[in-house]
Image 1: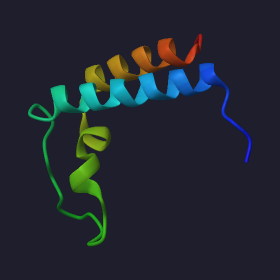
Image 2: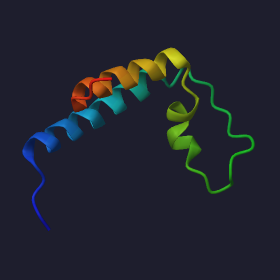
Image 3: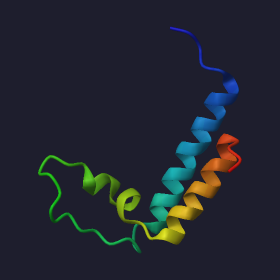
Image 4: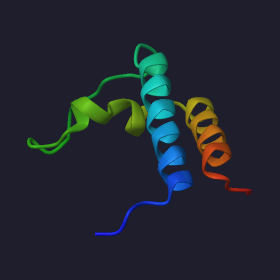
Length: 72
């Protein structure tokens, strides 16, 4: 197993931190609707990722792109 590039590791840690902060901030404003989900789904853990409104999703993508060095 080879070691991960330190810059890539730094970016992935920052991306994880962003995701936690973003999901926590948007959890109360994102509807939780487990109906019609598979019984063994992990929707309850990821419902913000699935159901966040367009503005919240755009915010996450914009900030994630900046962290990862993506220029769209």
